[in-house]
Length: 266
Image (cartoon, rainbow, N blue to C red):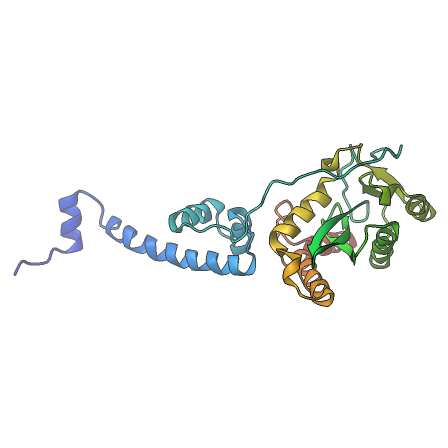
């Protein structure tokens, strides 16, 4: 029976250091452990890419990407290119946000609505987002995209936060309506509109709706309006409080709270 070589002797024969014999044995084990953590992260956050997973796990993003490639791990839901086609009117209201970067909450709010096919008809989800914190401040679900829907979501937003300096939207007729402009001006909020046929100028709202549709899935899987409304509420709470925003490196509500703490200490 041949005598088993010691690791030191084997290393001398191969011309490598003894520690190298351990490296390849340990690395797969560490990779498997990280793989399991990545899979668990995707169970909770199915649309996270490698950058958000790295932030979530506090691991270098290059290592996350390497292990995802190694084990063929991909997000459970994948982003699709957004499509634009909504008609615009000409309001005459300028884009007051074009060259402004907010440095505090409630400097600029942005608003929009999106269609949700449900039960053979369309529902409309209207939201208001704080452009600085990226938090969804208010949302309303309606069967029609009306001025009343827009006013309802604005009323909800001002009940929760200090009124903004500027409210920005596209030039949809719901936002250019006299009732909405009058509501804004009466509260000393400056209206701001994206140029005609330029929805990307309201990119923060478009970005939220793209994310929402990607991660929330089909509204039609919820059998009743109550079930759908509850599910939307749960998702928006998750988006605000648990989901890492890539530009903030943390959830929007956490970013808002950190800003408030910093302001109080200054």
